[in-house]
Length: 502
Ligand code: ATP
Image (cartoon, rainbow, N blue to C red; front, top):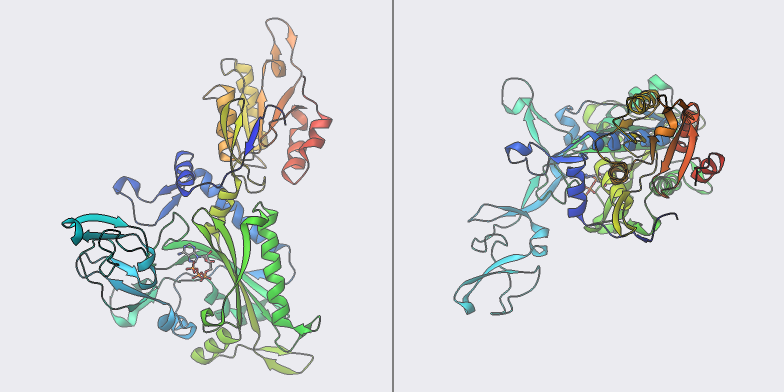
């Protein structure tokens, strides 16, 4: 490809992503000027665009385009009995241990995966930090005390509920306890009958919701991978357990369909096949409600970890809510003339984890003419900014005026920015680094030179982010060309139609 010597895609580190996110306005530490709030993050001007694009595409592909899907947007605070019925009050816990000295709290199953602090008796009490699971190389001791301070005994494991508790109304008493929802799923079960009746749905059908969830994670971390406040998009897909599809029980058939559809969705928007894999939950790992759960794992910078889960929750949730509310949550099967409790298949996706995966997979460092070029090769539909309009000379009023007018016109349809704060090479690199698929430059040739009596050609240069190739396109044709390019059209075809001057 033109002007490019080497292409070096590399497994990006978390530190590189964190620093890029801050520097270029994707993600900031929450309340940073006050020293930050642990594991809370704010999406900046580019991050919010990227996140909205992810949610919009999820909604378009899994709800809007499907006749068997509808959506809801439920309240975060729900009736407290919801969490009794769902099992969250009794089961949504992690075993944790506390240090009796420094009071730090750890997940019991994490303690031996952390590096540990050791005051070694064989070296007059010198302090060492020893890798996880290894003994001290001087005295051979293994960790028994707090991994962090190295001094305190740890308590026996205790179950810690991960739900955030609050109070509804002015009185802080047991009767007014409420919880911030730890998942969005329960609102779909609680509204099952409302949606069924109001929309006259027929099985199989699904209800989707995208929104915030809250978990008081004991060990949040790894940037936006595990936070205490995050966004999910969950789908509850209800099927008639008495039906069969292609000779298989309907719930099992639809479970596999959703697994395949979700895998295909991530790949469609840029995650590479070799960075994705399915992980089947073992029987002893399955949640109490699940017949089968499969995770889609992604090769994050921290290693292979869960990107989303797809569970067959059977009729557990509807039956529980029917039991606790006293309301019937069944479906009338016209054919068999009987009421059934549907089974449900649940694809549950973390929007923030998806964003982290899309960023990690898009990140590429290249060497172009001896210089490093950082590119986020986002799929055009994900890219926070679709087009940057750049004037070649900011001192020429006519060039600036024309460039601003082009931005305003294209911005009616897409997120388009104007930038004249550096020389063109710098401006291109900036846009590459935030994943803008196309730049438009307005130059002297575009506008001509009235003093010399030279007319402009009314054309601008479009530069393609990935190939760095250019095309020369009439200004009038820009909306149609970007429509083509941003909805999947090939750059090569546009470049062939509008060749750039050599
Ligand atoms: P994990 O095992 O990583 O704690 P989980 O199995 O508890 O996740 P689910 O309850 O299945 O997660 O939630 C569905 C999705 O929501 C997860 O696959 C993940 O993408 C996202 N998610 C869950 N917890 C968090 C969190 N604390 N921070 C960010 N995303 C999360």
